[in-house]
Length: 102
Image 1 (tube, rainbow, N blue to C red):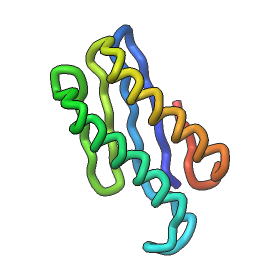
Image 2 (spheres, rainbow, N blue to C red):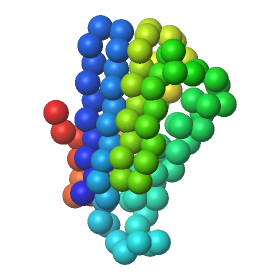
Image 3 (cartoon, rainbow, N blue to C red):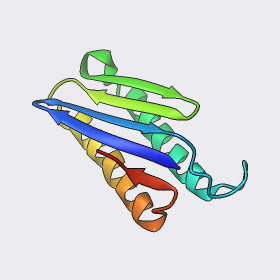
Image 4 (tube, rainbow, N blue to C red):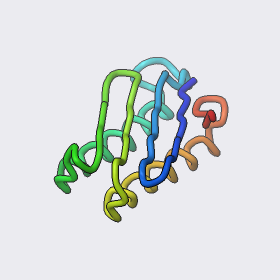
């Protein structure tokens, strides 16, 4: 199962995703593909918008993703909230494969 958590403190926000969804075998796992697409899309958008490490911190590795916002930048917050919403929607459709944890 893939899990994700969100922590907010003042102007900072942190989203972590880890694990594998185990919906199907490698190469046929549509849940894993959906999650990965959302994460990679977000990472690419951060790079394309040149938000940089003074605003955001990003770690994107096999089985682990972390996005941290360090300031109240409107664009950074919109990117963060879009990813949060996307993961919520995927978890509603596949609750056995993607779960929000506190």
